[in-house]
Picture 1 (cartoon, rainbow, N blue to C red):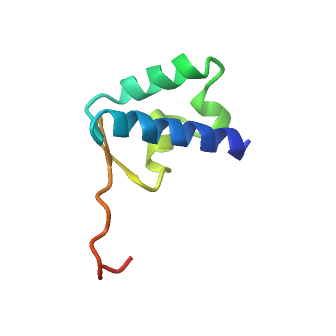
Picture 2: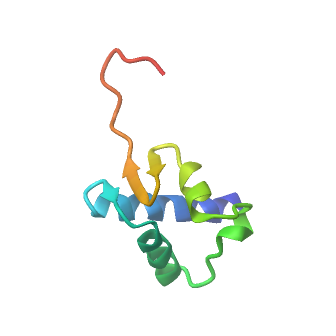
Length: 79
């Protein structure tokens, strides 16, 4: 369900924030999720890879093995 998916997304954002807004190890996110939610399986949410799931979270960027919080947009910048 998407409600569960939202819980996982919030958890991921929390993990990245806790690590200063950047994580150089994608698998650390996976491990943390599985630690907190033993039944977590990315495939249950229609994703074949963790990186695809992370890219679906609007405030994150994934580059190789690195996950980062996007910088807040400056005032006056358009979407």
